[in-house]
Amino acid sequence: MLKGQKTSIRPIEEDDIDTMYPWYNDQEVNLWSSGAWPLNTLQSKDQLALKFLDGSPDIYRYVILDENELLIGTLGFKEVNIPAQSVALFVVIGNKTYWGKGYGTDALITFSRFLFTQWNFHRISLDTWDGNIRAIRAYEKVGFKIEGRQREARFVLGNYHDAILMGLLREEFFSLHGKL
Ligand SMILES: CC(C)(COP(=O)(O)OP(=O)(O)OC[C@H]1O[C@@H](n2cnc3c(N)ncnc32)[C@H](O)[C@@H]1OP(=O)(O)O)[C@@H](O)C(=O)NCCC(=O)NCCS
Image (cartoon, rainbow, N blue to C red; front, side, top):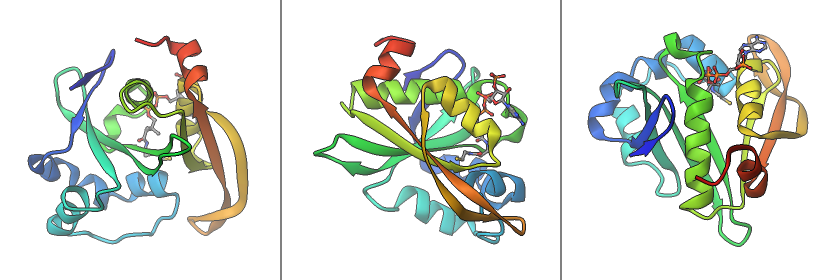
């Protein structure tokens, strides 16, 4: 278990699916996380379990717990590029009552440290869309920088939005948050 200030992180387990199920059928959660609502409609628990537990071996999934070890979100990494030591990160705090209270930033700092120290990655990438100010702000607090913008690459609630590409290098992270 990885320990942050407010959150802990552990690999996803089968019993987590029941808690996660409502998040992935929630319009608001999907809107912010994919920036492409309506994207998926009512997934069954079986579909969700298949995606999260038996999915691609190239996607590494974990869950985020609060101070009382209540499951509040998921995160993980994919697109591992061995020669470049780079990886793409994704995160969703599915329990909406936890938004804007620092849990996402804390989980991202904890997880980024794990990726830089234990996995020896050199670079972490992620992307979001220009309307997701809360996510961009949280990523910036972790140390991510905006590196690019794909014009009108997302379609959200009837309007085109730019995709925002962000990146974080290991030394930048260590200078902001320390190595341990
Ligand atoms: C994105 C997410 C992980 C961030 O985690 P969080 O715990 O909510 O974020 P934090 O509280 O750590 O930080 C959010 C920051 O954005 C700021 N913020 C929130 N809404 C804002 C707004 N409309 N304008 C400006 N700043 C805003 C907060 O004040 C805070 O910054 P501060 O600490 O400097 O005050 C979480 O909100 C989430 O999972 N949302 C739904 C799914 C999603 O968007 N996933 C990301 C897909 S790319």
